[in-house]
Length: 232
Image (tube, rainbow, N blue to C red; front, side, top):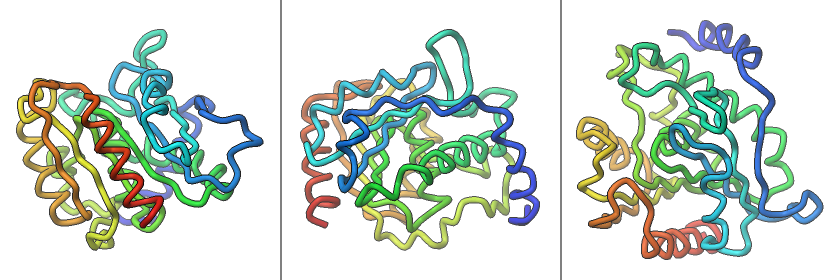
């Protein structure tokens, strides 16, 4: 698929999705000049789900949580279909990525940097964003999630992700339980190979948290952000 073909197809994406919905940790008048961290919720959740994390992150950050564009049920949303679903395609991943980037482009100028934090499917969203725009983000945090393997969706020569431009300099924190019952082994295996090749990885495992987030993990995330973004 050429960039021209992909760009032509993505021109229709905004018509498929609603207006962006986001929750902010600060009023609009108090955001300018602060580093921004964007939260991406998991499958079947919504923008309110991760806002409880804001108090565990460094106070210098403005925190914003964005709602996924596809409705599953009242109060439940997805960024794109599950990879095991019949209607999953890389087109749907591209659509969600462009949806987020269109919103980000409207807010990023008032912030000193943009960091991405995702949980579960939200990690797939966060990593897709940095794979599309390798130079745009200060850091990535992935909690109990994965990066998408285009080959698993039948895309062998996939050009939308600019992985060749990710030279291992973008800091990424990846926290998970090795016994996570939700993220399948094939996704973990692919993600392990991808992070080792493309980002500056901090990987920590948390036995017993399952498909969740723990207090010690959040303490490590805070330290990671302080070192990699605020002092980086």
